[in-house]
Amino acid sequence: MDQFSEHSTSLESPASSAVAATPSDEVDLAQVSRAIYVGGTGDLAVTMKDGSDVIFKNLVGGTVMAIRASRVHATGTTATDIVVMS
Image (cartoon, rainbow, N blue to C red; front, side):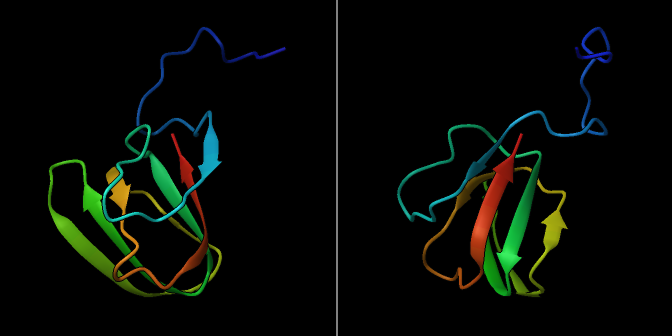
């Protein structure tokens, strides 16, 4: 039973799906993220929803980034065990 099924979804709501990300310089994520979990320490290179590219440096394993990203890049990403939540 989902007691919250009638509540509207917003960016403050918890994620309702998650998928392991395979970094790619050519392929966008299936859905723009609500947040990204980084399991292994390193850098995370992404394209944000607005089209800007950024590298988040020196993330510690276990970090959850509340970011809206459309792509996780292979080039520049050294972090591992990346999970995209939406």
